[in-house]
Length: 255
Image (tube, rainbow, N blue to C red; front, top):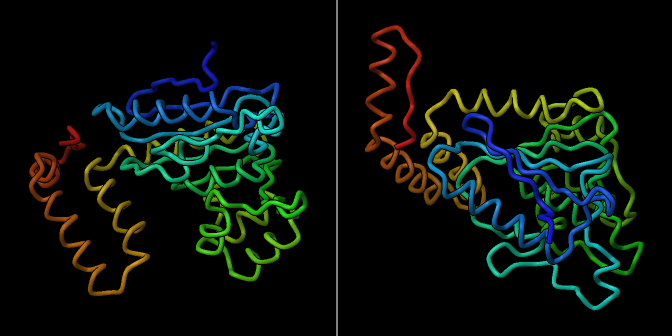
């Protein structure tokens, strides 16, 4: 079968594209399996430092493929990744969602499992599950109130109504809001800004933000100290000061 996810390498960046435009990139078993293996490829390749997740066509992702669900092929999760192969997946490298058009239900939950979000002005975000007597149980109800104000998250969950790209940007779901059609280019520019930095330091910083946010201060400081010890032991840790002394751009190895 054709892959439901397209994988492209640009310098140190993996551009991963949900590629079922005829189904608004809805998640079926194939897409979940293919997205999981794309993340495996990103995580396993030492020359890849940042991932970008985009959607082919006018929608980012409409969520679960209800046709697949109705026909009894409702396995939209993987063992390691959960829904869509991503929402419960343990990852180490930054992932930027590049969103054009609607990211709804499970599609928004995929966005919320990424680390940063770039959106075109026509993007929309929502968890409409309650309109179908469902609940957003692929992380939406858990992650959304950690990102935006609690009452706005509550309103989105209880009304099921989406918010615009502008509202999402105003409340911090979206890092960078660009003209419609510009999300991928903007995500590539953001990936380059991240990629200019030492990859292991970037990964350690990401980890402390994600895990430290759920810990009490003392445990979070311990986590941070442990993460920095690993970075201090790396070859790149010697390269940083050396490049500064020699007044040149550092040549990171990612080890």
